Length: 171
Image (tube, rainbow, N blue to C red):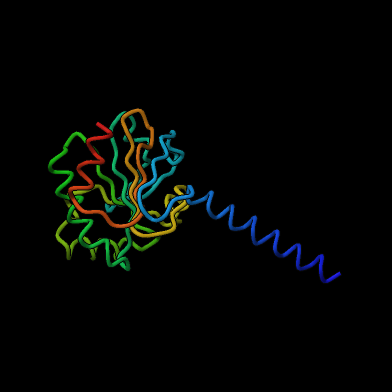
């Protein structure tokens, strides 16, 4: 009987590892290219004014959607670079979605960085966006073309030059 239990555990461990790899697209924490229709357009968030905002509100526009949190040390530099990206590519909508933190926590952080007025900041109280993209690292950024197709999914931090290259691919 113990052979059957051990065999069952081995099978479950192998299957679990395969599922984990599938969830990660079989990639490491770098860039993945999904080129699929975004599945998160129906999600709603709250902006810094308390208004409800859906990603569908930005349909037919190229999007850069970044997931960040105040506890993420890599997000400080990346948020500043996202502001520069938005200024260089005004035809692209750059959105920064905070992961399940309060308005006071998120806004105090972006106010201290001096970027609160430079990007669209949304609060995801249920962390539903991060879950919908299969998030497993921080930050994560999705690049969506005007047709709503995810052209790139970057896991981890990137610099401004890398952001610019990825934006050129969605224009």
